[in-house]
Structure formats: C-alpha cells, structure tokens
Length: 185
Image (tube, rainbow, N blue to C red):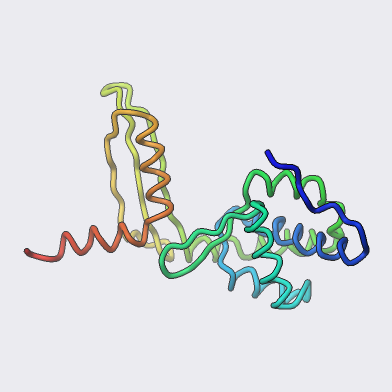
C-alpha cells in the first residue's frame, strides 16, 4: 500500500487536504459509486468548495489512486480505493466535525434516492450440490429490474471475474445481450 502523499506543509495545503478528504468521506459514506454531478451538486449546495476545486481535487484523487473512476459508457462514477480509505483515516481530523455531520446528514437523506438511480448487482454463491459457483448479475433502474442473469461457473476465480466484468461493463453487456435477443439474423 502506498504512503498517502497529503501531508500539509502550509495552511493552503491544509485547506486542500480538507477538501480532498471531505470528498473521500462523502463518497465513502454514500457507499455507492457517485457521479461527478452528484458530488458537485452536494458540495456546491453546502458551499464546501467551488466547482473548479471539486474538479481539481477529484482529478488529483484519481491520479494519486485514492479514488477510482469508472465509466459505464454514459457516466463516470467515483469510488474510494483502499489507499483512499487509509488516507481518509489519517487525515479526517482536517475536516471540521460540522462538515462531517453535514455529509452524514446528506447521506442519510439522499442515499436511497441515489441508490434508486443506479444499482448494479453481481454476487456469487457456492452451490454445494454441483460444486460450482452461481453468479447472479442484475441491473436495476429506479428499483425496476432491467436485466437479471444467473450463470453457473466452475472456478471461483472465474466467478469473481464475471462479477467484476459485469460491474465494470454492465451498459455494454446489457446493450449487446438485448441486441442479440431482439435482432433476427
């Protein structure tokens, strides 16, 4: 694990750390991948920082490996990495308790709404009868089922790969499967 490179050397560095850690804290507490728009909407509404600082900090957090940015073809979403969690734990003291409480309140009031907008599920289960793994993949929008697939996989490594590929490529997979089912060639 890499050492966090956020140590402040000046008051302006401390302010940058506060902003970056606040973003990590928000995304971590939401416990869902968040879009740039979702992050920006909250942060600007609470006057935590301006739009340009949000973009700068998100970019730097991705660059340093504290955030992971994934794209489903239409939107990019951010999740906190293990290194980001370590950095957040070390530097959370730079984020005022009032800011943390504001983030926690926002998460409790808005998590369900954000979750309804985007939910991708990929779970694996071991079937003791067949000695294979069952991978259940689903895509939901606004709590409505868009697609659900159950696949039997012989090896755990392959089952994990299926879960990861579903999570990272669900939009492309959904489109491809629908195209194959609908088109008559």
